Image (cartoon, rainbow, N blue to C red; front, side, top):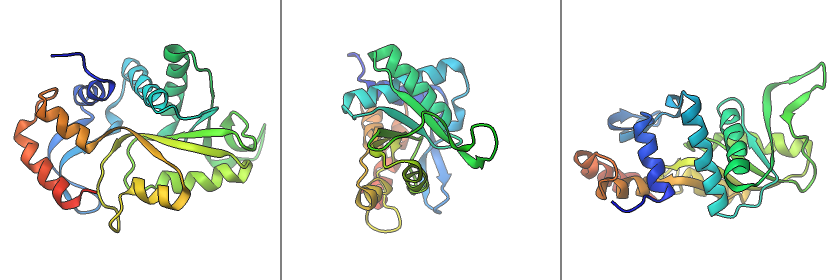
Length: 219
């Protein structure tokens, strides 16, 4: 097999970590999906270090302008930390990071954010796991804008499911339309389908269901 691209390598990594699984799963939306992504299955230091490298690779490959990575509490916090370390270690790009509190702190240094104090026009990239409805971005934007007129240059997620939300657009397309923010996935559902077809990962028996699901709900 020829050397894997970082996207192909990431899909294999997700399978190896038990994050990407195949079968029959009822989603919150009620849809019956042939695959499921559970980012809670990243549990070890080695896994988190590699995950950060894939985020860094995506930022670097897409040349996203960035000065600070923002991880929405709670799930986004370790993701932003691992990505900011990987950007420094792998690419020599030293940027800041911050995350929000669920409740503003009223003592000590106070405030809603921990880490870099944001300033006007600062180039901020939001880091999250999987976008289903765009809720994390919709909640993050007013919080970020409440402390400074930052320039959100993009959002990086692990997987774009590429499926319709409430209307004909995907969640990724909806937030682009609503906020003008481009969402950069490390991989898409199509990448996962191609990885099965190329036998980078096993799952040929689920291929027909994957294609049928994409036909029914895909954008």
